[in-house]
Amino acid sequence: MDELTIKNLAVYNQLWMELDDLYSDYAKRSGLPDCAFWIFYTLYENSDAYTQKDLSEKWSLSRQTVNSALKKLESERLVELVPLPGQKKNKQIVLTEAGYTLAQKIAVPVIEAEKNAFGNLNTKEQEMLLHFTQKYLRLLRAEINEITVLSSED
Image (tube, rainbow, N blue to C red; front, side):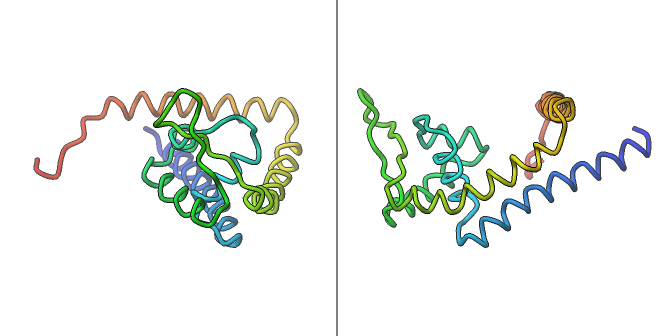
């Protein structure tokens, strides 16, 4: 790999972390752990029925992290876990009235900021950003899946 590729990769990874930090900082300023922020964001942004598993997969969060966040939000009466018809195990996560009000205060400003920032890219730039990010993710996933990880015992 040439030196320019290594430098560009480092810049890309730093940008990715900076983006993650931007959301994390906003969540903290809102008084929420990251996972709770993403739960409010998702439930406010989309009216689909979400389960704990759905949220874990959508945001690449561990089920334990989502479960802990949901228990706390449920104890604060910000979400309810409602059994899905015909299923005992899977429960839909629903914002309570207080949860919806909080989600509105927290999610709407971020969603508007995202829309404004993304809207400042022209259509071609938006498509390219999505296309190349998806392509890089697909290629990186394939490369990482080929790696044989040594255990600490090896």
